[in-house]
Length: 113
Image (tube, rainbow, N blue to C red; front, side, top):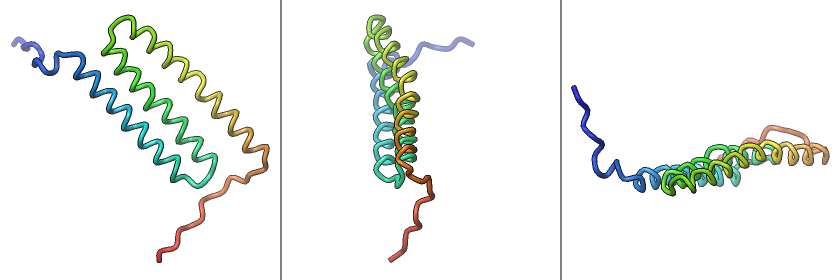
């Protein structure tokens, strides 16, 4: 049994690239909300480093699909830079916070009013 070609709306690269870019933007938005809601600097650091790994790279995949070969190489290099430098930056900020003698503690429970 032969499988027909993709539907016309799915065969267009721009539709797929836009969907992937919107997914990355949604992941970045969720990461921003997580950074705002987290009580501790270490938890905020965790949320922001996950934003780079998931959201920014997903947006770059969408750019690579939409732009063609020239953009794909650039987007790959930028994504590689993000993936390599995000853990290093997170480690540096965590060391700074630890050197300030900030205790890693559980957040205080919220009281219902």
